[in-house]
Image 1 (cartoon, helix red, strand yellow):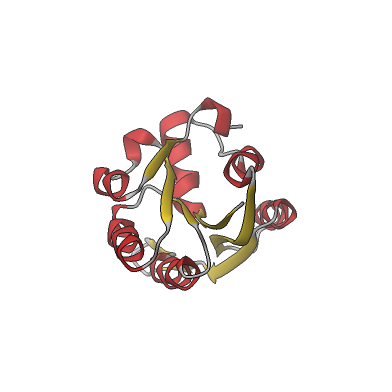
Image 2 (cartoon, rainbow, N blue to C red):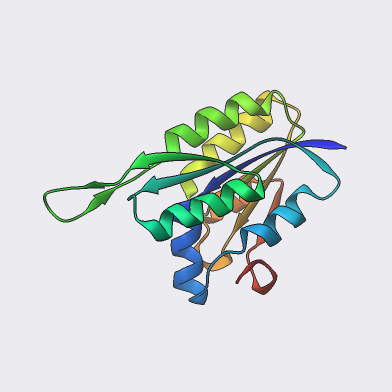
Length: 157
């Protein structure tokens, strides 16, 4: 069985599924599909921690599915904008686990990750899969992945 490492950009998936479908991503359905006949080496869900009860419940659901949840504090800037970016953390973890995996799965539509996928596929004998909302996933990320899996009805709540 292939060894798989999963990296979920929670904020990106939340906002892209909400914008395109007005629905939520079904992490349980994703898990069943992504891990079928595979051994999970690592599974991280990267999120922003606002500390509200609804969010705490969601984080526990992710843990129950099998994810290790990594949190950063929610930062509200003086101009009203917010900060909560896990790009560097996801990149460092993916590079570390590429050496221990056969398949790297990224849940994100963020085009910044095209460099990551190109790097790990040139340095390690891994296959990369990206799950993203087609209309909101950067073409460069789709092209960098060995396989792009569109988030559609079967992966939505």
